[in-house]
Length: 136
Image 1 (cartoon, rainbow, N blue to C red):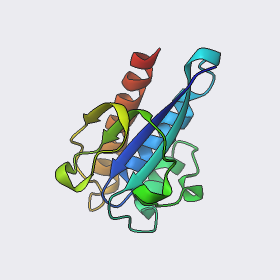
Image 2 (image 1 turned 60 degrees about the vertical axis):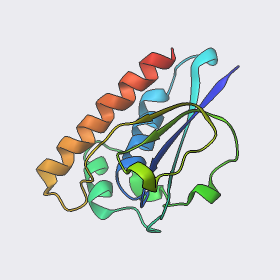
Image 3 (image 1 turned 90 degrees about the vertical axis):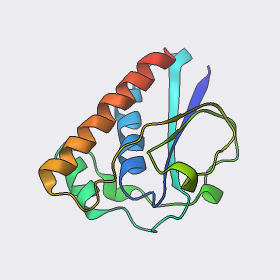
Image 4 (image 1 turned 180 degrees about the horizontal axis):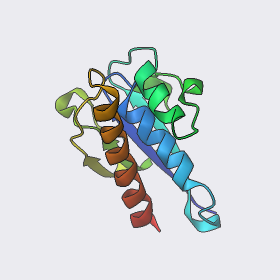
């Protein structure tokens, strides 16, 4: 059995990377013994809290993001990740040990209204699904 670890990184680890980790958990379920994924998220300057708008947005999809914690790069497993995905924070997200790296350039939704926030959430979901399909 091979577990592929995926890391999602943004500056505060309070919105985008948390949502991406959640969707990787949701859509990574039941992928078969050879395609299991373990999703992680972190921030280069973590806020220490998950954004309440992110919690509310994911609650609408029956996912409890309030159980997640905002954490720093120093708090994640020191392993080689299959993918390290940054959320558009550029130089503020340092590179980690990963086979593949990508930057999704997703706008930070923390100051958006709920409809705009949910549009960003849905974009993240589609990108996560595409990423998981590429791992198969």
